[in-house]
Image (cartoon, rainbow, N blue to C red):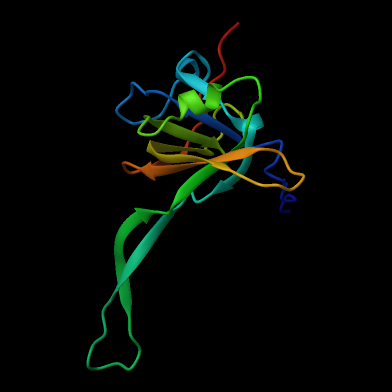
Length: 165
């Protein structure tokens, strides 16, 4: 008998971290890198998220013997990716961390911080722009950070084990 699928809403579950560096050549962070002075949990400051996926540009391969135009997988590329944050009236921690041209890694734990869950996506990034969103409406102040994905992301990596203790 099949078990019931446990569906969930990302808000309150998914975690987003920014890491300054990752030592392993596999680009999979350790728990210390994820949570220590190297890593910043941005989850509670994020208002909106866009992109953070791989896309493929198929190559058409029509032939004379068929009216159906077939295709083969082509090059992979990352979708335009950004995070929108709430502004903090008293501090500029996120703005300083994500200054233009800052490099690092955006790590998205899709199913939350569940050690060994193969739901961690790691994107090597460089900040392309950071711009405030101006409005005269009754809404919170926000700013948007656009990222360039600078290398092949690591998808479906295991969330690092929790620290012993």
